[in-house]
Amino acid sequence: MRTLLTTRGYYIHIGSHRDHASPLAYNLPPDWKPTGKAVPFPKDQRMGVLTHPAWLVAHSGNFDNDPIRRGHWIRYKLLGGNVPDIPINVDAKLPEDETMTLRERMHVTRVEECYKCHSKMNPLGLPFERYDHYGRFRFDELDKPVDTTSRLVNTGVAGIDGEIKTPFELIERLAASAHCEQVFVRYVFRFFLGRNETLGDAKTLQEAHKAYVDSDGSMQALVTSLLSSDSFIYRAKGQGGPAGSDK
Image (tube, helix red, strand yellow):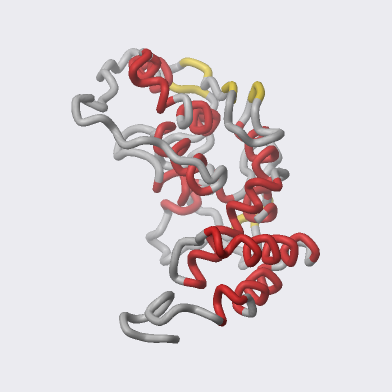
């Protein structure tokens, strides 16, 4: 998981001689030639999957970034938290003002009735304003310097809270967090066992995380631990398989 979050090397695929979009998304010249090897990026430009153009584009709108959606993903997938659904009486739209940056237009989310939920997402997503909705690294927006600062409070995760100046600071904290590792293990459990965990799976999750840590982050060791656990071997009829199946 740490490698996925912090690697500086990116494999850049070009589908055909007409495919100029991939190099441009990485701020490379359109005539850049692939080498078949991972391309190393400077420390102040890219770091892991959260600065990969594919992730950035997937959590953007057609014309704008979406710090709210990016923060929502991090809150769920890395911190294991949750955010309540949007109330039915709320018109969840940002004002349209071409003279204001996206961060400036997000001031509407700071009103009391909105920020209770947005405080769980906005601070996690705003550092990634360093990249546009196409995933390209940038220094300014509307001729104004891009502001990537943020402040995390009450995440409930040790080592995560505090002031943040760049997306890389946030990524390093996430990558170094044992809590995020445990959330990662939980999602691997759900994928391979085909269901959500229960209280009865606590021992399986603890042993899987231990196997992962003891093997220095080996995915093979993690999956082996899960598939040799009682949670997998002694499944109830119809659990974790096709309807009516005991396999």
